[in-house]
Image (cartoon, rainbow, N blue to C red; front, top):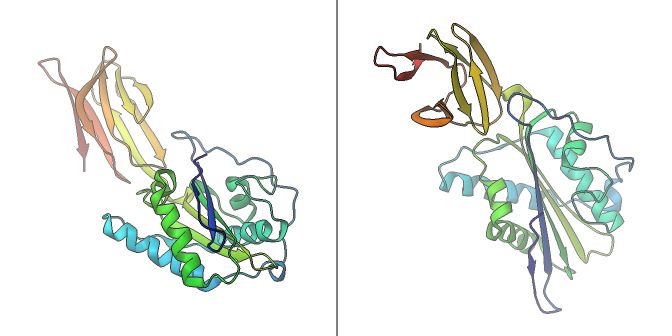
Length: 265
């Protein structure tokens, strides 16, 4: 778990960060662990700063645009999960991805989010008495941007949705921010691979290697866009394609003995 400590003088806020990412293995959906036993805390125990949350979302989409990525849209299930967790940390004083006895996937699942990809960034600002909304946003967002693990979550090309919450403790001297990113299971990419040759072909999709018998068609459902490459006698070939949603790929063996991979329309 990446953690960044940025020292400040006693008159300025201090920041602690943590990030986590959850994703299923190819073609399989990993069920989240059991729901946490801790009930969500009422918002009045930890006032939410909706303006700060909205600004963080806008800044993150600007960052994504600057890096050639599509914006993420707010999902209400992720938003509720982020808000409940930020409120819990602010009211309990406990911090960390498992502060409530659960984990990011369990919290998202409890709020009805069936994830294909899920990532969480959290931030804890203390000595934050009197810190205004703009300063909260700047401190948390810049801290995430400067941390490779958090920035990777923010610039994940395969996530499509987000939920963000910022909450203060009762004393007003500590701020907790939660940033969730997800891609729902309903948005898995589906494509097919057909072996048009008369021999078994092996191919690699991401980190997984698959055999495909002659005349056989296999359907994949994947969360991430990953290259598919052919393998010959255990060696990866230069023949590779990155399948898109709905694609139909065909593998053929030419008269020369070499294999060919192409997209069928």
